[in-house]
Length: 165
Ligand SMILES: CC(C)(COP(=O)(O)OP(=O)(O)OC[C@H]1O[C@@H](n2cnc3c(N)ncnc32)[C@H](O)[C@@H]1OP(=O)(O)O)[C@@H](O)C(=O)NCCC(=O)NCCS
Image (cartoon, rainbow, N blue to C red; front, top):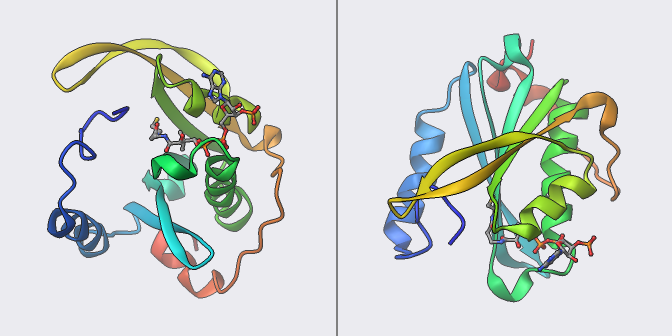
């Protein structure tokens, strides 16, 4: 359980759907979170979010990832993070992407390192009410090279929704 909010401890479908619907309902160009679902062979296997506040000004996004346990460790987490990074950098004109993980979460750290992020530092965050060592990562646009081919389709009409003129 690597999250600040331990949502995988007690996964409830209604709460899961409500979370996604609320993200749509609360969407504003100045504050948005795009919660995407990753599919493998037509089956949902995980989620990948990318979000920003005041993106038009900051040009900075933050991401979060989760893959079902049977699908971890096969390169899929790297692919799904790369997909939203390509959306952010090439599609939306982001200048930087940030991410973070608890110190014990080596898979997440490895994904960040493989994709070119720099480790910024360490701080203490809480999970399940306990303190944990947490690493912050940042990827600047100049360091971004996607390891997989990614095609962005139909984005142009949606750009104003992201605060991009
Ligand atoms: C984090 C997560 C999204 C990564 O996705 P993934 O598909 O498992 O990751 P990948 O297979 O693309 O890459 C994992 C990397 O970690 C490496 N790795 C795995 N276990 C490791 C270990 N114990 N020590 C060191 N490296 C390890 C793998 O070898 C791989 O690196 P490589 O390609 O250089 O060999 C996924 O594991 C997940 O959903 N975990 C649970 C939820 C979570 O932690 N979310 C992120 C919260 S910050």
